[in-house]
Amino acid sequence: MILKKATAVLLVVLLAIALVATIVLFRTISFQYEMPDVESVHFEDIPLDDAVARLSDAIRFQTVSTLDNRERYLPEFDAFMDFVRESYPLIHENLNLKIVNGYTLLYKWEGSRPGLPAAMMQGHYDVVPVEPGTHDDWTHPPFKGVVSDGFVWGRGAIDDKSGIFSYLEAVNYLLERGFEPERTVYLALNHDEEVGGRQGARKVADYLLEKDIEIAFLVDEGMPVAEKIMEGLEHPIAMIGVAEKGYLSIELEVTKEGGHSSMPPRETTIGALSEAITNLKKQPMQGRIPGLLRDTFEPLMPDLPFRYRMALSNLWLFGGAIEERLGYIPHTNAALRTTIAPTIFHAGIKENVLPQTATATINFRIHPNNNIREVLYYVQNTIDNELIDVRVLNGAREPSPVTTTSSEAYQLMKHTIHEVFPEIPVAPAMFLAATDARHFTEVSDYLLRFRPIRARPDDRGRIHGTDERISVENYGEMISFHIRFIENTTSGLSATGSPAAQTAMP
Ligand SMILES: [Zn+2]
Image (cartoon, rainbow, N blue to C red):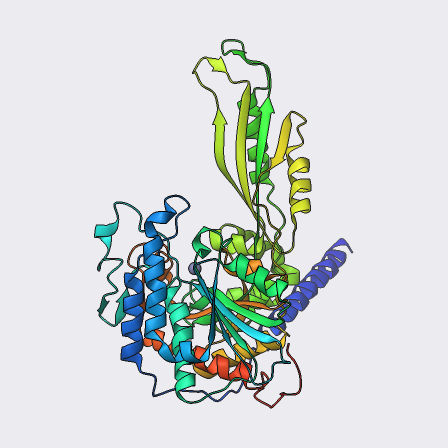
């Protein structure tokens, strides 16, 4: 009798397992991502040698952004602006140039239908300095613009001179062929992105708001066409940055009676602060895959190893496990949740004296799922110690809104990527660093952060690092992409290629 009952229970359990396994397998196998059927577009007649020569020349200007000692580099900024004027006479004949705040170049290419909200494309020509002592590590000097082995080498080759010069080449190409945009296009070449953009991009945004200029969408630097973004994944993916994280630094301070270290009390200032930081580390803010991160993975699914595909198609079962796994890898963790980084710790002056005050600074990068108020609430709850004062430091900002992938602006960019980079899937993603786009959240709801730069894993260290370079072939692709993007966005074509000239977008 007992045996019969046990057999029945076992049978039910086995059936349940079989059912779950069937659902998991079915969902894994039935998941399909279809590459859209788009005709590829080539521009055979781009004068690539001339374009490369201009980019190489542009790299020679040491347009370095630093917070201190800014005056030292200003003559380079002036010379750079002259160089742009001399290099593209046709652009300067046909587009209106406004110098914003002394150094940012804002071009207006007037469309034939002024009623349409304008398209805006921006980037920056300032660069970060070369770290002292690393000049000799470069294969070619950082400010020579050497073209060698199929690459243009130097500071700014990726970030972001290739970006803005590919805009200029694209506009020049179109002007030479008599192209007239229907939609007005603004091009902004900003001058202080690397130190926060308050003098350049912010002033451009203020100008557009003040003049009530309607901007349909804005394109800025951002995510690349990334290769090998995770183990087992050979296929490149083009990612469009649709959101940016927020920023918050807080200072924690504990004040207590000091005294001699021979008879320490149970709780000391350093002890209390260390415990607070340990608690924050042990209980990070909740991360979630469903939403943007899941959308980023989606086009990659067919190429992922089976175990990942199975887990991602069955988040109802494996969500927790995969969130934990992604939490261990710094860049996936940063995409998953609001991150917490203790960055400064001050306490104590002498080895046998208990410090009366201890302070720590903690930097948060806020996921669009959270906001500043939630982070502060989480900090108070997790620390749960009345002795600790929490102070918000200057410079806090909320995460950006998320640009919806159903918007026409996003769809147009995606369509253009498919035309110029056939076979490469496109996904929305979160941009983990900061761009000038963050100054434009009041100007437009549709901010797209994308550069058609092919980035391999080892390129990550070149941005702001040593041996920054862009391949000549890829630079040609960047120019092609921007020619096609301007054609698509300004000639009244909708994302699907069908005429939609009557509708204002997005
Ligand atoms: Zn940049």
